[in-house]
Length: 239
Image (cartoon, rainbow, N blue to C red; front, top):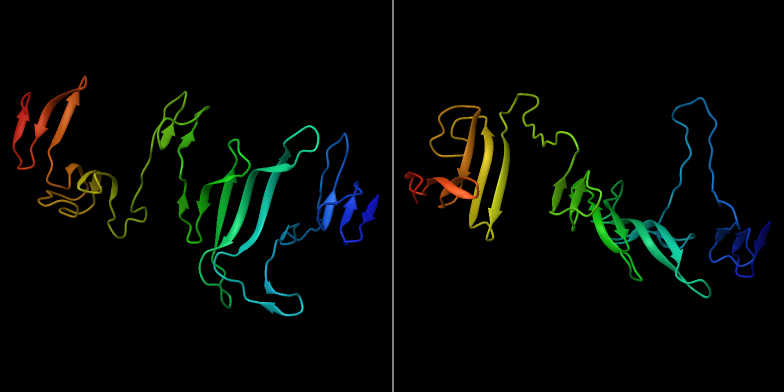
């Protein structure tokens, strides 16, 4: 049954809707189902959340940092007399200057670890970059032990592939930096001789070393075995 309150709120399955439309169900799943029947593959069901400044009669351009819409997951915090608290949220937020045929927008993901509000955990920026403030675990059953933790019961690998069209001779590399970039090391495949280091001997050479004026060490059993000083001198078993 449907109820319309004096405030104009619509309730289906409830006499006290908390918003313009609320669906409620006791002792069973409460589902909202939108179905399209059409042989045309371009026809489909959709949920559209829209935002405009101004009023319906006099719309206006939205602005930077406006929220276009959000999907919010809530749970009741007490057996009796409690309130619904956010457990997770997905938010679409403007990042930039909207204009004719231009709508720059980020997508934010929030979770709640045990407080009264959710915390932003990941953002997909309007340009496609992704920011994750916390740690990422792939294949880990519990919290990752580092910023990036890969775990597998079988072989585990990282594959970095560059210059897939073999047209511009781009390099594949891993760069390490510490002390606010005062120390920088690199492991790479250099497509052109001398691209990444002075004195490169050939194209497609594998390089490992320091970009800054710092030594390089190779070690086994947690003990340095080979030392290359910044001036190029090499020590084996000595510093």
